[in-house]
Amino acid sequence: MKISFLKILPIVFLVFSFEVLHSQPYYGFNFDKEWEWVELIYGNYNVSETSKNLVEELENIIDINDARILFKNLSLLDSLNQIKELVKIAEIDSNIKPTDFKKKLESAFMYFDAIDNLDGLIYTAYILAPLQKDSPFNSKSYKEKKSLINIFDTLKIDFRLTYNYKNAELILDLLDKKNVDYFQLLKDNSPDFAERLKLDGDKINLCFESATQTAPLYNIYKVINPASFSNLGGIYLYKDKISRTINKYKRDEDLLTFEVKNRVFQLLPYEVSLNSKLNFSLGLEVYDDYFTDQNVKETYINIESFGENYLKFVKNITRQLFIKGRNQIYTNILPYAIKGIDSVLVCILSEVHSGGVLNYIAPIAEESRPLTLLEKDFQYFKKVIKDIKYSNKEVIDSLIREGLSGFAMFYTMGTEMTFTMDRLIGRQEIKNSLIFGPIHFFDSYINVYHDNEKIRSVFRFPVDFEEKVKSLKTVYDDNITKDVLKLSLKQKENEENPEKWREILIDEASKIAYKYRNHFKLNLVYIYLADLLFKEGIYDEASKYFSKVIEKSDEKERIFIRIYSMFEKKSLFEESKLLCSETIKHIPNCISAHLLRGIANYKTDNLNDAKIDFEKVLELDPFNETALKYLELIENP
Image (cartoon, rainbow, N blue to C red; front, side, top):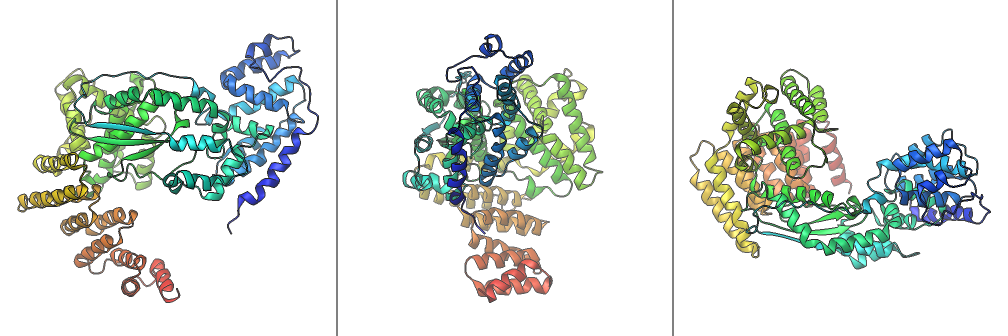
């Protein structure tokens, strides 16, 4: 049963509103002014030595601006023990988006008891302040940090970056309003943005209603958990600073664009064209298909994720645009061409390659990884590739997760490989790897250390791995890759005329397929062309080439399921049915193909055809629950 949180909200807010009507304890300190830590330590306020030590620790835990908000609102409570009621606010917050903050509060308050004096207030702040450390932002985010400029010869590059602040400014405006339908105002003023929001209307209203509450308990909750109410809690506290930050971004657009462009094209070929729009937002999460759809030219950026840390902003945008640009020139053929245990290996190689290159041009960590730890990264990788041969799936999955999480050993290893190649042979081979993929990347690195004795043995790979890389490289064909690449780069010449580009792409794809019609790697041609057409949104033609990929594959059902999922995610049911039919042509009793075609037929209201497919599934698998469910829906709508 769906519950409207808005209906219970006034009652909850009313309970907390009584707290300011009673007399409050007197602490003998003016928390309304912009006080400093030294005043609490050295002022004549009868603070105990223990409390002075706590203040010194607080200075390292919480920013002074947040501390002023926290201390002031603690001083307004009827009693310091009233902070235990923060758990009730956390429960409201978890109804919007599940978090573990309620549990953290309950744990912090398990043995909590404070006396209503200045020592007690300092102790209470000391209990609460550490809870903020996991928040994505706080008042420290709004202390201006300038970017570092990296200059390369990028004048001839087709690169356009535009900035839209409308949504962020709208949210700031709504945070100044009371007793309104916030979601309706979002829809009225920015319908495209409202349509993309992940939360429903009731929860969005609850976010704003909660974030704009000014009762002391709410202010305390917001300062120790700025991520509260879909980040609107912290945004409300820092809205003046955020407004000034937006103005600074507007002021520095040219500088930011210059810096991002220079970073992105350190390694991207200059033939790549990038034209993107950055929609600045605040708090509310959106569904963003920027990465998954090559035709989408705009993405959403939440300002609170960066504050005034320009360098962090530049790195994030650099990473996004680099991925977008690389998608123009790279087709991941490996899932189609590699099978068995090798598919696990190439998955790891892809992560090392992509993560390493990204970290090289826009590192997330501020400091370089020590040499001793880099040695451990390589040793761990060697252990994983060795264990792939002998371990079960659960062990392998665990090893891979370990390599991608925490210090991300696979990524730091990839960064060191990128650095080594850049230093010893220049960037061309790294740029080539963005076109030809991770196998080329590893093969180039292996060639580098064979030609250079300065690279220590710890940064080299076992001989059997080197041989495996050489054998995997044979799935590629340089001429086919280059022909398809030339075609994909013609897109920018026809960017303003999509219909003309569609005609050119279909015609040129046909010519490439004809050119290689007798080639022993013809299926590789079909993979490249299908992927290019799909990325360009020409789904009907893409499905025809993907059908040929399925036809020529040794693992038709596995490849079919992979391709089908791409079309199904975009609700392309007619093309999905074509893929199912192609698979059934070659595997008449393929349960998954009949089942998925039945679902596609059902979703396009072809109920008779759907029924035939589901009955065929039950003929092959009498207890198939999905087929039984859909047949029930057809017979009893």
